[in-house]
Amino acid sequence: MLKEWTPRMGYVAVKKTQSALPQDIIDRENARLMAAHMADYEALGVRLARVGVDIEHVVDRLMTLEVGIPSWGMVSGGTRFARFPMPGEPTNILEKIEDCAAVHQVSGLTPRISLHFPWDKANDIDEVRDFAHAYGMGFDAVNSNTFQDQPGQRLSYKYGSLTHSDAATRAQAIEHNLECIEIGDRLGAKALTVWIGDGSNFAGQNEFADTLERYLDSMKAIYAALPHDWRLFIEHKLYEPAFYATVIQDWGTSILCAQTLGPKAQCLVDLGHHAPTVNIELIVARLAQFGKLGGFHFNDSKYGDDDLDAGSLNPFQLFLIFNELVYAETRAKGQFNPAYMMDQSHNVTDPIESLLNSARAIAGAYVKALIVDRKALKEHQANNDVMMAHHCLRMAYETDVRPALAMARLRKGGAIDPMLAFRATGYRAEKAKVRKTRAAHGGGIV
Image (cartoon, rainbow, N blue to C red; front, side):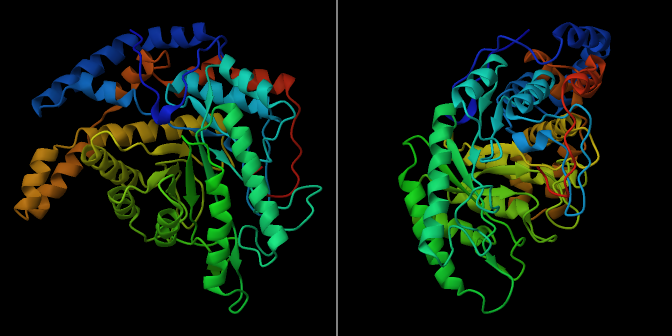
């Protein structure tokens, strides 16, 4: 049975009038798996009931989880060395929207697209909005780009953008962000994400305090232009392309800037933007405690900002992050509304399949966090029973919650097994027949 669910973050729900994938093939795959799925679901329900958890409540909660899709994640990624396009990948924003709709159709988890400008700039913004709405897709936070010079750009960002020593260059970067807000407002987005690569590669290149002052002055102009119901997400990153000192390098600088700018400014956490040993779940708890956790870019990493599939290397860390998110939601009593998005680079896989892989990992981590016995956990913590407190988390993490994920997808009209259903449609092969193959010009993610 298809249930209704409430969209997060105040976005307007849109009604789908066409499908990216043949629904009859998805239905056929679901019918083939239905008996086994129902048996697994009933077994999980019995197991959860033994520890006082109602599986229907868990599924209902899961159905409220929504994760944005990055438009730039729909094409083959790359490194500094090379990029290897795959047949059938999108070559323009409308084709990207089609692929995003395919992900959402089988996953039921990704109803909005995050656009990046000027990568996704279009002559007719209304056409882009209407095209997405026809597929039942809305728009997530829009992203500005002042870390690259674009064709025809008057002033260069080689030495910085919002923090540049030249006032005219800063004004150009501010104007670009204001344009992103205007476009996003027409699309129905509700937030702007600002990440800059500004910083220095040599000691003495910049004065640390001066660059941060210029950043705040620039961001104040952008903040002042936000619509009343928008948020401004400040994204930090430890290094790259500035390797000696990045202006917005960690969550400490990010929260200080967000507090300075005002209540609409919040911090965005990209899971790959930290040093390898940083305790990200602790950062999540701190930002949430002070009302400045704006959202996430979900991915995974081994060495740095690898942008691997979420949960593909460190699924326990992803669970621990959601454990903090669920606890923060409980503490906030309805005032906690972070924006979730996947930000990944798919160098050797089909981007659609990688995003389906990540959506499953994110949903699974959320469900496992929901079934943590928090009453017992609190008691063990109060009694300093270290091992039993840890045991509470391990028991939830080690529970096979896949039947709950499948039920949530099914009730949203999606697939019991999204990967198998997607492959059964032959979508990528069909698109390879009608889409031009992208040229592989050097490296990069776009």
